[in-house]
Amino acid sequence: MSGKKSFFADLGSSIKAMFAGPSDPENVYRLNGRVPLRRAIPFGLQHVFTMFAANVTPFLIVFSSLGITQSPEAQSALMAALLVAGFGTLIQLLIGSRLPMVIGTSFTFVPIFCVIGASLMRSGGNGIDAYYTIVCSSFIGGLFVAVYSLFYKFWGRLIKPIVPGIVVLGIGLSLLSSGATDFFGGSDLLSHMAANGGATGGAPYYLYLIVAFGSLLSALCWNVFVPGVYKNLNIMFGIVFGYVLSCLISIGVPGFVDFSTLSSIGGVGANGWIGVPRFVDPSLVFAHFEWVPTIMTSLCFIASTVESIGDSSSIAEMGLGRKITTREVTGTLVFDGLNSGLGAMFGSFPLTTFSQNVGLVAQTKVVNRFTVFIGGCFLVLASFFPPIAAVIYTIPNCVIGGTMVILFGSIGVIGMKMCGEAGWSDKNIMIISIALCLGFGMSVAGDFIDAMGAIDPYLGGVFQNNVIMMFLIGFVLSWVLPDTMSVRLFHRKKAEGSDGK
Image 1 (cartoon, rainbow, N blue to C red):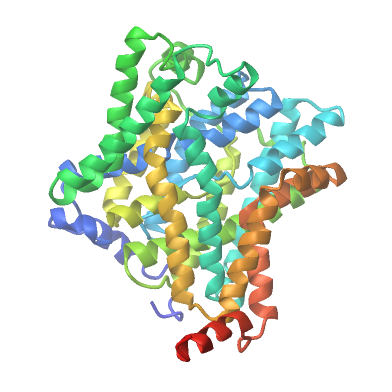
Image 2 (cartoon, helix red, strand yellow; image 1 turned 90 degrees about the vertical axis):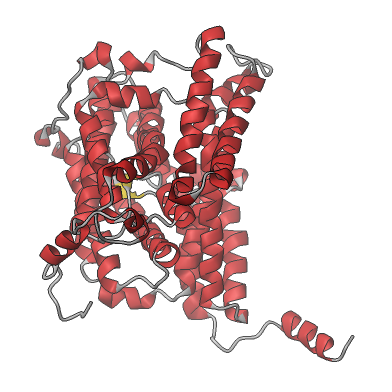
């Protein structure tokens, strides 16, 4: 699209294109056009099931660290998370990037939010005070990123082609441990086993492995043996199969599926059949403004911006087979910021493009906006009907992990492919090597993270985020290293090969 056109000049035509008829089943592989509901609904729900648990996981981690898991603020925020994720997805589809992306609560901010909470509580505050400080910093940071993203066409030129590839690779690497942890039962179960000599405190551990492998194998078999377009519903089938298997196990082993969440997380017993997400009190939010948390959150928004560039670039590359446009990147970033600001007013955390859904697009090639729109509508609907969300929350971690290993691994592969498309020059090889070893390496160097945290808690949180570190190293080296550099080792090997040695 010509850069001379207004940002919203083609809004009407874009919306019309998404709903254009007649309905065609093959439109699932096209960006625009309606798809029959018999296909649009299952493919849209697959996107929702893929991200549903991960959308609330950041809340559960942060609320647990703040000690407010059962507070009214926490319960309200969990339901609002569905609403703002749904609205965020619809806004991106209609106005923002107009790419088939799903929006959800970002994991990038979790380490910093936990550090902010711990620091404020050590200073005499409580978990609720810390929560409102986090919400305030999220609101200000969201507006900050929305404003500076309007100028992406200027500063975006500073990001060389190798950098988005490194960022996507970093995102994939950051998700690997999460996928593997869920595959083997989830962090809560594994922590309990580590503290109790391997005892699970409930079902035998091998049952979790059976469910995880069953979910994975069922997804693979569905993809191999089901013909036509429906083979791409393999992730949804794997989740459904794993959940049904878990429920059957739970008949003989009560507690394998934790149905207590039906009442503890906005379920029937807590709010009835219908609930309405509500705004937080602005006076409470802005009364808890703190400079340092706001600055740290804004820095995390910069890292989140880089992730969004990488994710949206992956969708264009792997789903649409083309480079992403400046208009699409700008729309992604601006509305990620605005969605995060809006979400904060509901007590939610910052929102961004969900990497697991990027992996789903890359694997299935289902890029239809109308189909993703159906999924976004379901998220909004679920936020008003707590039992829907409560049932989905009961899906065990091993079920999600059994299917997510397919998607999380594919994101890393996409990053490798993007790095390859940037070119395997000696300079790029050097940048990737250092970004991997140093950028990713320091994020898993526990002693180093502890040492930095001892110097300053916020500093430890920054170094622990491998996406931030890999981006910074890749960006700096892309400008510092000369384009004509050579790595003697590679040239010596080439010379030896040419001599027949």
